[in-house]
Image 1 (cartoon, rainbow, N blue to C red):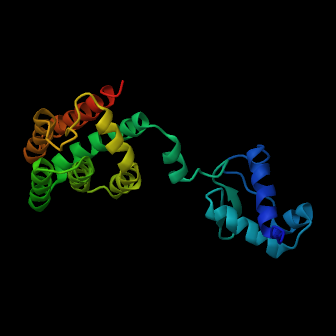
Image 2 (image 1 turned 120 degrees about the vertical axis):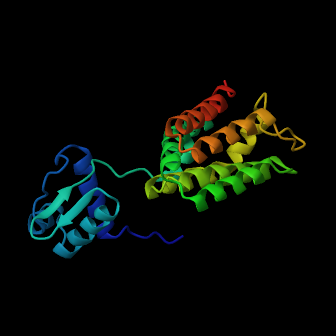
Image 3 (image 1 turned 45 degrees about the vertical axis):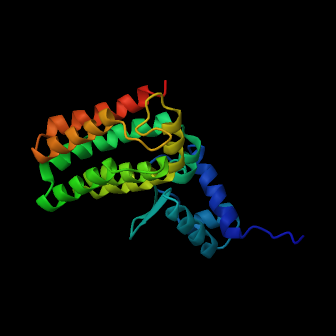
Length: 228
């Protein structure tokens, strides 16, 4: 086996990150200049620049033209996929409550006629015969995404797209374990659950922001409670 030495820039980046984590530099504080850091780290200025570039890419430092390098985070933000692998389904549903209840209110306020038709189509597909829980989860996700999309907020849609599809298998497993799943093992629809989605559509169609938010919240909280 060939042992490869870690590049100097990588080592320098880790040393700088450790110093940030230790509190040597506070949030928003300016780092010493490249020359000073090069002496402290016993590396060349080009190595310091590359180390700073790496930490800037990881969200810890930022370079401001003519001003220097500043601390923008006290640690490397954890990878989103790693977070999702660790959290349980209850935490995911709680996050969905926060995102989707606000998205539903905004959708009721901002949706266009075209988007309302898209939500209706997604609702109809969700209620159509489905041979598997997997297909139901996909149809359900498509409905909720159509609502979030109608909110006209790119951050909300990015958050939704970022974690719901990655939890697809967990959602399928959850529905199999629920006492009253949205569909049973043979794919038969739970009408009460679907009716809750119909009421959400009706609130959005009526531009009722308060009702849309509450219906979205209530639906997801009932999903959470079913796991207890």
